[in-house]
Image (cartoon, rainbow, N blue to C red; front, side):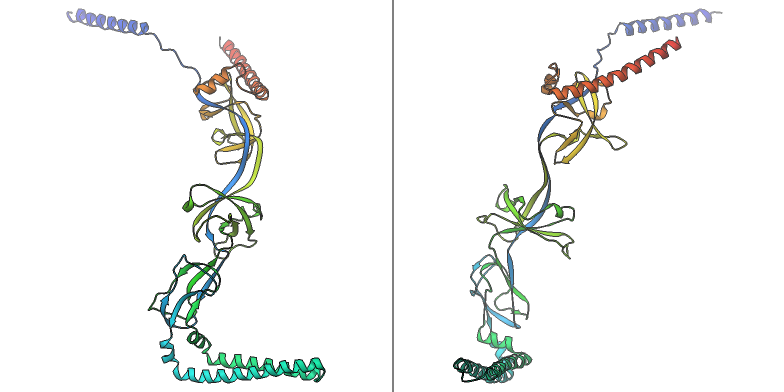
Length: 414
């Protein structure tokens, strides 16, 4: 019986504590709710845009001529190094012919005597033909006699060539009589791969002389870009080795067939004549294949894509965001051309758009744009205001219909 008063006392204490807590909670003032999704906006403007493709290549010569070794022979001395400028006929290196004389001794003796004999036969037949030409002009010999003499001179030359070729010592003879290897053209020595005291193999490139009439950059482009490039097109070229700026080049040629090695199309770009570059320097070329002037441009990041693939953006009118369907055109590095849906002057949502829906309340967080948007019609053009107003009207009508239906439902519940 004594336990009942104790239980009642504990119950009373708990009830009082609960009421006190509820009272304290009720006295706490609620913090004011911030309405609208935070967004940043930007005024839609018009400008110029061009699609561009960047490809890499290198500075090249108009012509590269390899210098080949005719015979296996040791190099005696090297006269040039890579980067030297040479004229046609300038010495590149000299061969040591002492080994050749030892190797081909008896064969060279036979070759030399045979060559001298055949050279004399060619000289005599050519001299005979020349004399008959003078007599023919005087009417002293017939046309048939002159033709026979010409045929004899040709046969003597052909016999000489075939006989000496069969002996296989033409190149050895040439080297023995002129051991100095010379530049085949005027230009720059691109490479030298011989060293004094080291033998070279026959028909092996020992040096390359490059001719630069006008410096060029050669790039390889894909089959999608090739049809858009034409001879005479301007190209922005940058060569990091000579500076951070760009120079304007001109398309000199466009290959009509793909390279067998790269499966790409080779494009040659002429550089300014006075540009100081070296062969092999790395280069970048920017092709602008299409352009628009005075067109509506927006940040590419502002564009959203629906589930059905259609593209849209959000514009702000007052404190409400409205969805606007758009059609896009050219796409640049950071901007996209808008061909329909926007006219310029609208307040475009550029950040926070992914959290919006049509008619959603918003608050602009970038102050400059917010002040512009708050100015009556803001900084928007009349076309933009009309676009925003029509979007707003459509959204409000939709909201009104939704509200009426909701009210009716509540009445039904009541």
